[in-house]
Each structure stands twice: as C-alpha cells, then as structure tokens.
Image (cartoon, rainbow, N blue to C red; front, side, top):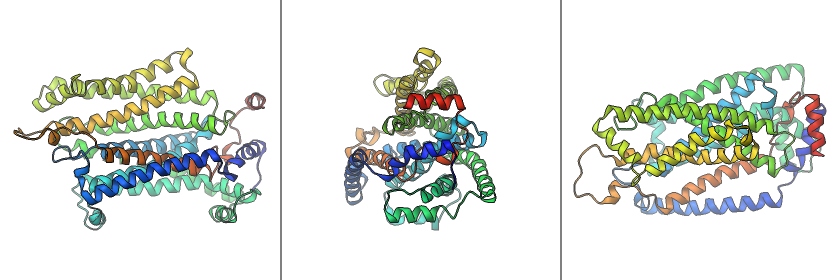
Length: 446
C-alpha cells in the first residue's frame, strides 16, 4: 500500500514502538501481571470460601464489583460514541485520537463484564443466563446488550485497522515471523484499490452509524436495571440520559489522560498537540455543565418530594458523618473543578486539563459508588437487632485486590495493543494538519 508524505512520516516515527517491546513496557507488563495474580488469589478465596470474604451481605448485595462494572462499561459506551462522531464528522483534528477512543471501547467492554461475573458467585450456573433467560429480567436485557455491543466494538475497531495492517504487512519490519504472518492475514488482501477503499469506507461509516445509537441504547438498558426498581435513589426517570451523559463525560476525561500518557511515553507531541487538549477540554466543559444539571435535578427532586425513604437517603448522602464528604468530592471534583479549569485561558493547557480530567475520572467512580452503596444501605423495612456489618457496607481486601486487578488488566490491554498497532492511525493522516501547521510542528519536533 502506497503512503503519502504525512503517512510515511507517521509510520516511520512509530514503527519502533511495534518492532520492540522495550524495557519500560516489560516493566509495566510485569507489574500489571503481579497485580492480576494478586486478584486471582483473591478470586480463589472468594470461590472456595464464598462471598463471606467480601463486604457484601443480605442488604448490600452489590459493592465494588457493580461499581466497577458500571464505570468500565460506561467508558466503553463513551469511547464508541466519541469515535463514531469523530469518524462521521470527519474533523481533521480528531483523526489521531479516534484509535485511542476505539481502544477504550473494546478494552472496557472486555474488563467491565468480568466484575459482573465476580458478583454472581455461582460460576457453575453462568450458562443459565443464555440457556434459560427470563425476558422479564433487566439483567437478561443487559447480557444481550453487552454481548451485542462487544461484537460491534470488535468489528468497529477491526475495520479501522485493516488499512494499517496492510501498511505493517508491506513495510519491512524487524518483527518475528508469526507477527508478520498475522499482519498478512488481518490485512485481508487490502492493496489500496479504489473498490477496496470504497467498500471499506462504506463499512466504517455504517459501523459508526450503528455504534452511536447502540451505545445510547445499551447505556439506557443498564440504567433501567436501577430505574425500574422502587428503591430510593434509583427509581428515577432521568437515569437513562443521566447514565449516557455520565458515561460520555468520564470517557472524555479518560481519553484526555490516555492522550497525555502516550504523548509523553512515545513522544507524540507532533500528533497529540495542545489543540487536541484544548478541544477535548471544551467538550469536557460542556459535558460537565450538562452532568451538573442532571445531578442537581436528581438531588433536588428527591429532597423536595420529602418521601420518607428518599429523605433518609438524601440525609445519608449529605451528612458529614456518613457520605457527605464523598458527595462533596464527587460534585466538586467531578463538576465544578473541570469547568473552572477549562473556563480560564490561563489554565487551559495540557497539564492542568489532564490533571483535572484524571481527578474527574476518580470523582465519577466515586459517584457510581454513591449511586450503589448508600441506596442499598437505606433499608425499606424496619430492622432490629441486626449486626452493623449486615447493614453497613465496607469493602474487604479481596474486593480491592480484584478491583486493582481489573484496572491492571485494563492498562495491560492498552500496553499490549499499543505494541501491536500504532497509537496514531497511519492511514488516516491525509490532511490532519495544514501545510503551515505541519511545517511548524515538524520544526519544533526536530
């Protein structure tokens, strides 16, 4: 496959990243694998001794595992929406970051459902979800939605990689033979013919068109698992758009963090420019404002209604002795701080934007925790003579070990995939920058 000047420069600059794994990459890989091994040991304890090793009990039946599932699966939906919109809008500045969004989509939809399996407990009955599904159960809807979304994510990323696979196939890379053969197979005989380009473009456009509404639908289905119950804090009509917006918001923040990381690690300042951080910062600001509106609506309507169960939950969320500081952090760091940093030109720079995006992602995880745990701790029936640990949830070390293992798996996938394909798509750089910008950036790079 023939490359133009920009594509050849991009490939030559990144080819060393897929030719060699590097000591730093090996170091991080070993570290992630150790975290995963610790998680596997915690899983062994959970299987052999039961859920008693976790903090989950009869009342708080969900804990960190469901929080992590909602968080990671939301990142997946966000990546698909962002990648689909950037692909269809054909904005030139968005081309270098589309692949990162697609990475996030696929990896998150792999890692996220693992936490559902950890929460189920009876692995020997897992196949019953597919053999004996109950269509009345929202959990069945979620299983079908996640499986469908996973298939779409794989196809969406693969179609975007076919051109680059042909580039890796034709370039004389210093790589093992098995890897060269794999590139040859995955390229599907693509040679850059006009008919191949047309068919591939149509396929990519169709997948982008499918993935955007699919992401919205499956995110809404996830929210209905909560919204269709009668529990205080969950029984809400705004949970559908609330979950969709929250997913895109946290995904935008993680995309900024990933972009900063790869820019520093692989010296990709030439492709992940200050303009990318500024534009994604603007998007983050708008999403923060929208998410803040939904959050205010959620709290205000529950408080104003003055229903007993809702009032108990609101008191629990805003009481400093219970979850008040958690709620303050989730709202201040997750809504106010990103708006304040991006709104002022003095702080609208890659460093501050990345830092506030990272803090915001943590705050969004805390928000998921506040959606799950306080609601389950607010019992619907009077309870007497019940041990505190059966009402109050406290995560145990096996839960934290499995959480850290999930994060390590997420980062390990990112590390391995960035060594298998180029982080910046080579085939999509026909007109990413104007001639003046290319000249200026190239001069700064050298």
